Image 1 (cartoon, rainbow, N blue to C red):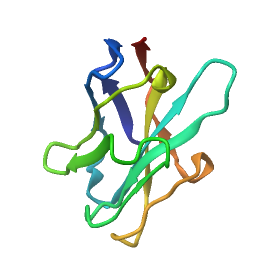
Image 2: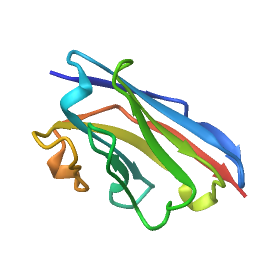
Image 3: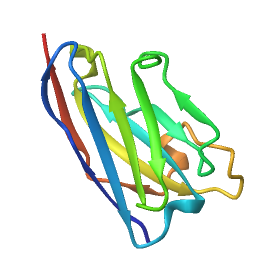
Length: 127
């Protein structure tokens, strides 16, 4: 079992930055694909970014390309999401997710492909 705990959410003005962290326990993340998802009120949960466990491939939703950066520190069992130039439409609960993958250069972009989820952290961007 993998337990994931997100932190770093909060209230920020438009144009500001936040850095989300997701710390894992239970197993080493070195063979796990990691992803960040978000869910706004009344909307479906959508992928924001994903990263392979070799850190050589990343994915970003079009809405966050150039503003968000996903990274990971396997030694610390932690994945990060640096969010810059935040917009009110980025307001959502952000979740991290993990799933084992035998290909170190692959990632998943759909929620059903992930086995483990954190409890979420609220990000609110005011205009």
